[in-house]
Length: 454
Image (cartoon, rainbow, N blue to C red; front, side, top):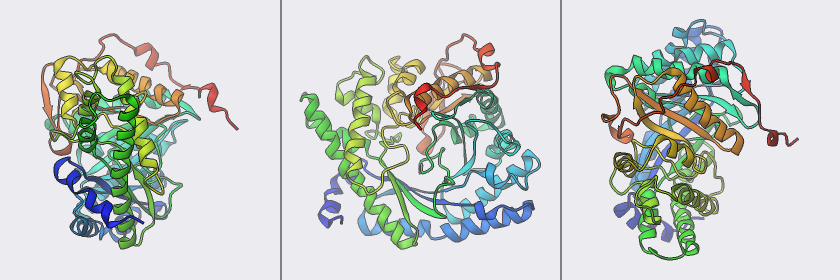
């Protein structure tokens, strides 16, 4: 049981240190919506989501009011749409119609994002998978709240390089389709290696086929809470540092567990997992980069950054896993550039480069996240960046991802404003040397030798 004392203990963290529950995400299976007729399929999807998620906002607001815990986002994830639309979608525009239904119902129930416009193609693509992927630019350009993800590789299957090449082209096309909004569509599109089935965080959330008919997943945050705790042990040994992070992560995760259990009870939907990731926002003081600086770095990106991030990620998981019945999702530290003021400052100071960020992704939760690059960057270069990140995930048996934004019409030295939680970002330089021959080989990079564990 979670005591009232534990709830009261969070007051200072909420009021002074930016503690919040980042999201309650209700995952909904759409497998029973599959139909050979597109109109019937769209109708079933609309009715299933509307019925299941109709009280999500009301429930979140009740929990906020009762416990005084801010719940920043209420969201929905659904079964990968490539699976749902395969029987009825004959063209890319058919798939885009389903995206519009998702957008409509998301607006009606009041969530800010709905994830699951997705395909899982780590070993190969069906016709429906490829059709959905090719529809992504149109889908994201004609909707506001739909998020898209594609899983391109895994430790067990290797990396689908045909899909990697295609996604480089799709990201460029999405940037062009949404260039009037500073290529905003790419901020709602992420590619994965080893994507988890139970991720509540956008843009990569989808409802896995191994999940129940509906599930409640919660994502907690709290970089400001961790940084404030570390201020009190400045100059102490690594042992003290690690213990402080663990204890703080435990408290933050207990808040998430409380919210998840309450939401589950009120909605009559099973509790899935708490994702205990440190997810920053553009707000001053709510920064993972600031934690790294508190650990002892002048800027994120300075020598020692990867070690400091590895330490932080590990201690967050060790503390958080003891605080919840079920921990899942990504769970660790997010390092998006545009959503973290400390990361932005590090880029502007010249301390943080794309290459250093890639090194950091070897030890953090996700990957190259919310990074703005010149709009003139070639599709094959983007594919090469994706391939590198997929390889890190595949070899290290961890989830990695790329959410990269080639901002059409902008170049290094300029900034782009996305607004809200997506923040703003300086345009980062990209290695100018080509990888066309590598990307154009086609086929699949095999799974690593240590994947064979049967």
